[in-house]
View (cartoon, rainbow over the protein chains, first blue to last red):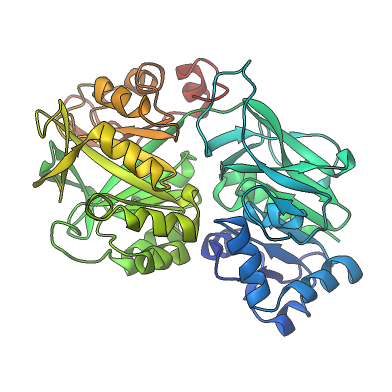
Length: 209
Length: 260
């Protein structure tokens, strides 16, 4: 359903206020959800996250959200958008931690490492960078050129199935900056802090059928 | 294409925005909410908010005011001033701040940085190094408490220590150049950028857009921050908030870079 209330998963690790602020600015209703019974009712879900991979998964487990998120993502197939660490949690694992991820996107997160042929860049990758779509997807279609977004991360998702790659970005090496596998989507950057580019992306997510 | 960040730095003092010269002579430049709205319009890369009173007065951040300011900001916001605990950081992140910088507290207790990085991730934790020439044992000494106290470590030593404890970014601020608009202390910036592999923001002294490019090209900084340059205009330093257009920034940095 387009334009229904977006449920922002609050597991205590994300910068939720910024996301709620921007959704409100573009006229999209949202509410924070932290209990399994609230998530069970969600028909569109944002999964934010900042910080370390294990802390992020631990926070979802502690709140008993993993089973209900699995049900929403894989059975009800409601649109889910992971942001930053939230995108990394969609994958199976991360070099950063020991825990298993949600496992909806085959692949894992790796720390930035640069071949000897490029000068070593500073990590975290912090700042604005352009996002290049790998294929057509409504999430990025209406984002104005040059599709600049704000990034801040040290790890990036490596997809096992190239069909899941929605967009790439270059920071010394090309890396996956957005994924989509059916109803499950993720962006490594922060649309909620990316001015008109982020507004366009979040609006597209809000309008997804 | 990655481009170095250009960051307006707003100083919070007595409830308003002020600009100092060499950490003194604070001059009123306006209302914070109004400034942030203008900076939204100009689509700034990032915003740095510094409460210059908090640590010096031994008080907490003004959470309510920060919430009001950040609620209007659709760009990433970094905050610095008076932060001494991970609990305060948690509150700031919950208000919508992306990155929290500490200075005095981190230098007094580097474990604070380690605890914060473990809890919130390195990418959200930065350390401010207020560098002053001729202080301490090296050419680049450090000061804290809004310039009133001398730290024991040199800038490079502190930079390495903080990176080791998990800081994701450093801000090098030159006390000598603050508000002078005579250019960054490129040597001080280079001293720090050569010491670490994490991003470094340059602050203190930018007087022209060309200075921003120099901080990146010659200083090795990943971002160039400025106060006076973006709040004053003309020889009489009239208050006017400005920010270069994106095309200008790209031209400045030679069509962008693929990293710094």
